[in-house]
Length: 156
Image 1 (cartoon, rainbow, N blue to C red):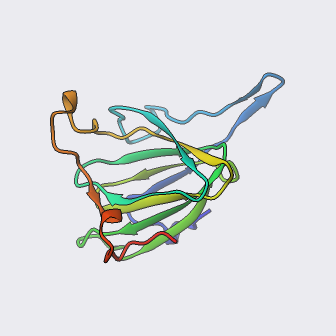
Image 2: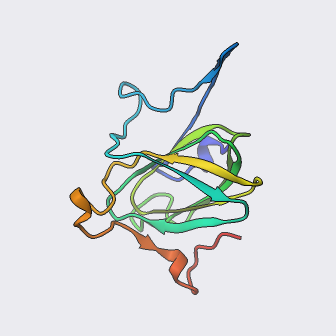
């Protein structure tokens, strides 16, 4: 787990605890009385082993990722906000089945992840903006650094 003084400003990392019994387990991932983000949509994605998603950033959207497994990811974050106290800071951590966390990523923080578990890894995202707006008729709020071969943001 990343230490508090190693966290990019505005990024919120919360450990997720499972309540287990004879039936299995239950993990709360969102509570309106405890979480500051207000999701507009939700999606689940599977990423094959060794595959990278990102890095990209949003101009206005905050992402609210849930990493509980199955599988693990290497998560990479870079503060790309020139007016931030942590501008230029990079974070990297393993998240997922071995480190169950939620991560809120504010606009301007570049992020991406790589599946490091075979056959792949599962993630959930509850962003605070609709992808491509209502009816998918607006511009997508994304700056895709993965499309730039000269990008300073790289996931190994």
